[in-house]
Length: 187
View 1: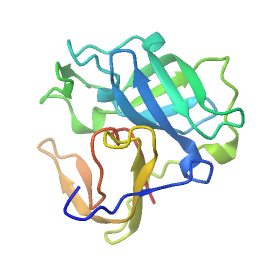
View 2: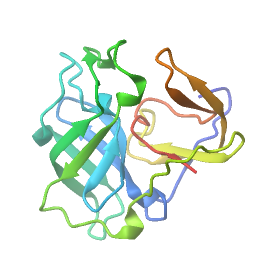
View 3: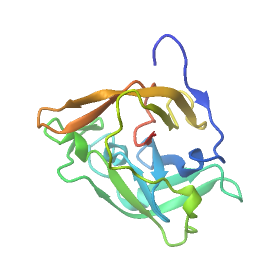
View 4: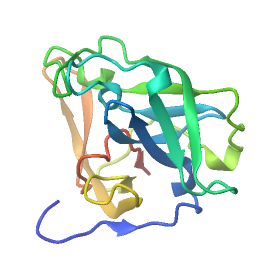
């Protein structure tokens, strides 16, 4: 996090923050997820690992929690999910060193009993390269404030690098801690 606290509490009922929620598992995992479709949540695949054995938890063991729902806290059950191709994990939970870094994602399909999220509560994903220096924001339900959505609103794209497999990876200056995993980097 650094010497100075730059994260601040954000309004969970305002865009884009109303698209985010906490991803919680019965195994004790806690991360952030973002609505990217009417019933689809994007998060990090390692968020769905059982910390004791490194196996993926069953969909029935996952909940997506949002605070801004009209009737109060929304607790959405997960019907199914898919993870990035090649994602593997070790106990801890942590990604396997041989797992491609760009495979650490999961798309969760929320249960049919969950009301469809309106278009203004879903994020649009970009496939374009964002130039260095572009202002970013990164928010999440982080370990030091697990029930409050906090965000770094003044970070930037530092540039791009390549991993050992040659994949292009974004480098940024956003401050975050455990629990922000799965949260979107917002442009």
